[in-house]
Image (cartoon, rainbow, N blue to C red; front, side):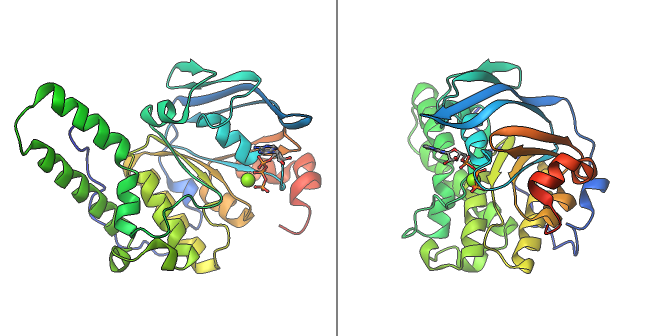
Length: 287
Ligand SMILES: Nc1ncnc2c1ncn2[C@@H]1O[C@H](COP(=O)(O)OP(=O)(O)OP(=O)(O)O)[C@@H](O)[C@H]1O
Ligand SMILES: [Mg+2]
């Protein structure tokens, strides 16, 4: 079906303090939508991941935490088909795969933001978010060629995509910057545009690699609220890598803890925070 889906609705007014303790009040997670089984990944002699298994339930916010070099980004790269693991499998909505490429994963409804931003710095906010729409646009043009030879239909589709992107811009409260080149925006807003690019794919699962890195407290609160709003309003499942433990505790339902490529913890925020192994490897007393 090539119709533009349910739009990202009207931008919601800021729910003050939405991030604080929000996980408790949110919808219950559903069935398992994504299952990572016995994944091992090595680069030459470097074992980035060793026998990692965990699952992600529909509609939950699942955090991945751990020290630098623990394998967090590598884990997301395995899930979205950037890295091919030597061992193990990933099952997404009942389909198991070992060798999917990025495009196939995207077509299955998984979108990703990157630790180091992957935006087109010289292009406007609008065009960058539109670039996240490409996959859907190409599909549409193909479908149009197959089904609908009438001139004008492509233009209508293009307008619908633009409208969808404008809804995202409203939702993320970046209307004032829509024509600005992304490279000229402060870092915190660039992160928001990156989220917008991923949302343009209308993902069922959103993989976020340190979406709040380098942000001040206020920017982190804004980003937490956007993530929770997406999760609440559209039921989007979120897998989130984050170093700021107060953010992790506030917005996630369950947490996986990695250390030197191994899983050392998996449970609710309270459970992992109380785990002696997690405390000694990562949390210590400084987080
Ligand atoms: N493409 C690659 N080639 C070689 N080694 C890699 C590659 N990607 C990751 N690694 C190695 O795998 C290990 C895990 O790296 P990864 O980036 O997944 O860690 P991380 O938990 O995301 O760390 P950080 O918190 O610093 O982002 C590291 O030792 C890293 O050097
Ligand atoms: Mg990383």
